[in-house]
Image (cartoon, rainbow, N blue to C red; front, side, top):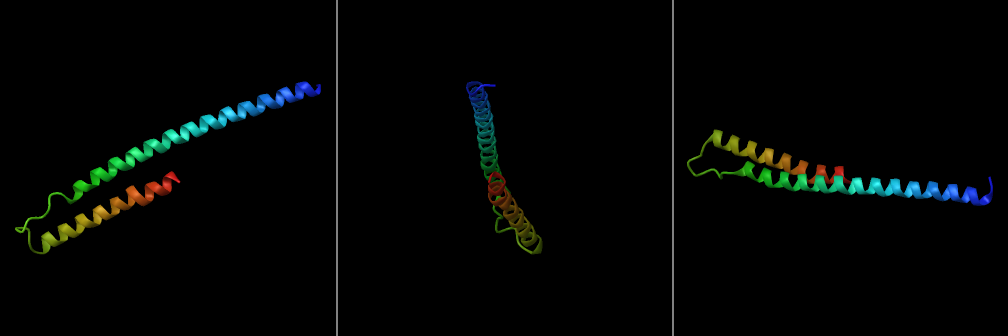
Length: 90
């Protein structure tokens, strides 16, 4: 094989590699966009966990337990949709 043929083959391999990398980057960007969209939807949905606000009629140990459980669920889901999703994207 002459030098020109070897250079031509090398160029083809490089171009193929670049095309492959560009495709991988495009797919990663698309996946990142979908994850960000899902994260935003999740953050909007978890706000409903705290609704409705407990009225003054809700008193006593059951009301306190319910409110504490609801707050814990919100905090857990908030961690998932903020910290966990951010780590996943990285």
